[in-house]
Length: 333
Image (cartoon, rainbow, N blue to C red; front, side):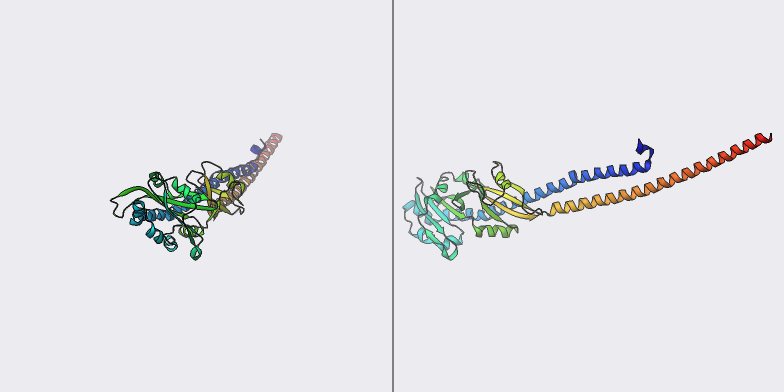
């Protein structure tokens, strides 16, 4: 009621209320929309990293298919003679085709040939036959090659200790593909620093890989560990220790669906920071306009009240003059 009797108080009060509504809408609507855009952008970049990894690992499938249609593996399956194959799959050849592990299995599921590269670069050496620990995951897909081919490359993974391998398998035929066998050739590649460097160059983003261990992710924050434990986890945006940066993460699972590693990139919070800055600039502009409006409206109302008061005082003087004249007339009459 007091405000209604004093319009000069009512205008600032209404302006303050409008400012509160503007700030609330800016925080709940505009900034929230920018936060959603940022999350969508970070998750899209996480997905982009996975796709870049798939593109790199897709070459492994091409190498496997090419060698499965080569006469040497076919001759090994048909005659049991492995001489030339053993010679042809030397360290330099395997490094050229970016393959760290090879396995040939006959129709009965018996290993005919296997080789593993241990070490990097010039220090790499061959281990043949390869250890059973790295062969067992591939053997499980002998006879299930169509199922393996239907998976995207990042879902054809297995982990042995602290090593993660991507693999592919194909049915062995002769070079003309006129004779098919039920034997399988598998190639596998370690996802190591070299592989990650190639993916990093393709996506032009910082990238690291963290292994998922029995007790969680060593050195990771609790939010990351909780996210990894989520059965539906694929990609996400997570906070970092720096408030102006955010992490995009993608979860890698092995062939059984068990989490084995997290691909992680860090990004500046450009979208949200720009959104906040522009939003508060808009709010400041609205506040400035409201301030000018309130000032002008207050000045006009103040002048109007002064004008009304002057008119009322003038009318009061006229009334007093008229009353005086009436009294004078009465006295004379």
